[in-house]
Amino acid sequence: MPPAATPTDWRARLAEAVGTLGAVRPLGGGAWAVEAGGRALVAKSGPGARDEADGLRRLGGVSAGPPVPEVVFADDDLVVTVAVERVARTPAHEESLGRALATLHGTRLEQWGGGSSWIGACRVDASTGPDGAAFYGARLAELAARCGLGELVGGVVTRLPQLLPAGGPSLVHGDLWWGNVLFGADGRAWLIDPSVHGGHPEEDLAMLGLFGLVPDRLRAAYQELAPLQPGWEDRVALFQLYPLLVHTVLFGGGYRAQAEAVAHRFS
Image (cartoon, rainbow, N blue to C red):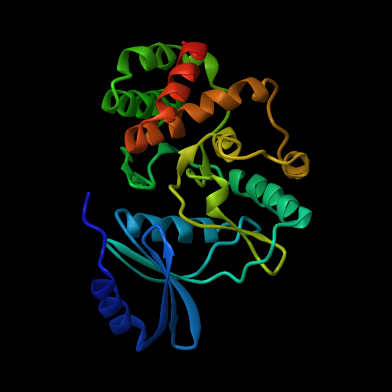
């Protein structure tokens, strides 16, 4: 993993790209609020910056899909976007997110996988292929091997052709937890920090529910445009195994126990 840019490093690079910088304020997590050229920006350093920028552009290219901040600058370890004016979360934000996600997931792709080689600070294989079970199986097996759960998760991988729903691949955000949703002053829910790829729509919804409840109004708005397939409730945990393994690789701790419980359930 390349080292994160120091404040001095990225300030010089950004100033060269956009002009003199004004106030700079740390936001945490390797991100800073920056004033430059009369605009409020957010600078974020870390691995996968170019992939993140490319993902934002892909999401932003979906008409009526989730809004994303404009990318101002990106290089190997720095991505800079226009800041989103934020307000407190409202029911309108939740409904907006449901409709926008349904529209996003209506973007059909020819191959599974592809897109970003990173989910957060965890590297993943961005290979593409025509088979969904093979794609998810390879991702799960590789992550499980990195945290000593290969044999247990292997039982899930073997059963994926029977466990996965039909359909796909669709364009998915790929790292959709509530920390990557911003509630805009315009009443829309904005998305940041994607790990885009060709996946199943249930993947995004399952991850959204891993670190917080998915409101009924969000799901209802989603299903007005894209009804979920029968049995989706039973597959939520299945699609949560991927982010749980990512968190086990990065952080260990209780995430490992959660991943083991899901793997036992579906193996």
